[in-house]
Length: 451
Image (cartoon, rainbow, N blue to C red; front, side, top):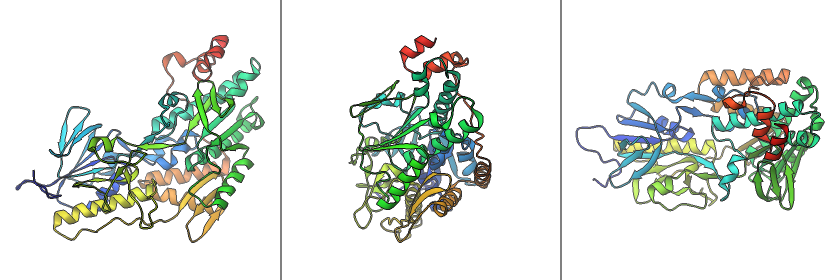
């Protein structure tokens, strides 16, 4: 096998394989331009997902189709593009071959891994059953189901057992980063307006929302004044923010934080992520989060034909700080790698080392509440919220999604209505209410007593 990065046999087109159709993977395609090559895009889902708005699906503000688009529809204009719905199980670097779960293999001359990240429970993977996070549409609809079922069960169970009703109306979010802050604010707004307008026995005063952060402040990557503003905004929404709390245990009845047990039917994980198994596939050095330590051009050291980008890659900025695991960084890396591969194939000078351009960091707390840090200036309140909304609409894939989400947000703003409050995904034995629903959300003793 030739040692050059773009080597391929005479008489055939070079083969480029991209694993992952997220922000990074699709940006690689944009960077490649009209390169004359066979391009294979592999993903285990058939859709591209706008993950920053998943929490709005989980809190019934948006429907799943509003923030997702079929991969084949996105790349249909690329005539040399092959899309495979499959899962990567390994990589043979010497044979330049990707192994798939279906048993098939795909050969490559250039390989890009943009496989993202998954939840990290810090060695307590069994917590996932009781405290789901949100990384996929299935995760978001599962969380939405838990939240909505909890409200329905509290309404149904209004007189039978006060303690159980309190558990149903207690929502615990673990993790004070952007995802946790956004989720806490969204649940607060959902429960405040839904309960006051549509429920007869559940009122906003009954609902407890607890945000737990192990550190000494929220939004650790934001300036301290913006983090303090975010906490103040959450508290105005009725969220109980608890800092310096280390979670020791999670089960079907709730959470143990330090010495205290919080009984809750709904626990949501937003505390940590780890990279995909790409480092294991490549047998390459990785950081503590499992991200592949890449060269300045995003390639794997010793294998210039393999690139790793996005949440799967560990790379530092010029000042030594790590490049953040956010969508803009993945998009920039994807464009850089695409242009690098295209330049190699055309025999042109490659772009050189990757340089991350920091355009700012944003987080929303809720209606008319957000914080924005541009480095050279900071914003909060309504202006920040409008900017956050505009930026997220801009990064959505496709005009339809931008139009639908923008229209839905405007309708929600004017009417306080969240039209995606659908409880779906029930198993056949969960169709009746309330006993089976209580079994799903409450602990065993309560389930037996109510059944």
